[in-house]
Length: 106
Picture 1 (spheres, rainbow, N blue to C red):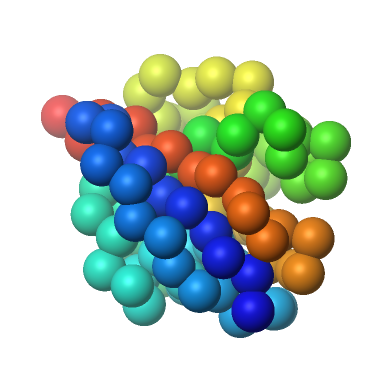
Picture 2: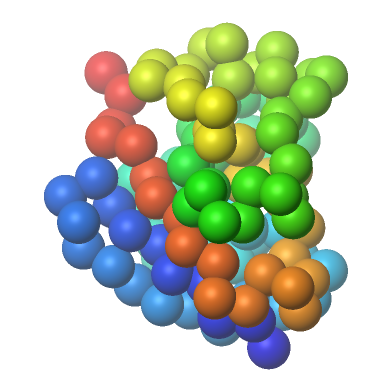
């Protein structure tokens, strides 16, 4: 079971076990990760599950494209390593993944 480390905007880290095949958003919600609202439930219809993927994992997970990129246009402080966590599927290769959440949007 891959271990994912979520770091909030204040630097507090939480390591969670994620299941292969679930999304980062599902793993975060299941483990009560703060600052990740996931209002649309994973439908890629909002940007409330916006996260930053650690640069070491960007080659594996890639950059946002298509509808995900469109939804990120509604988020604040979008960076090259920004992704919607509902669009990132966990695999064994994600073991050790580090994800940061941006400060809550106003």
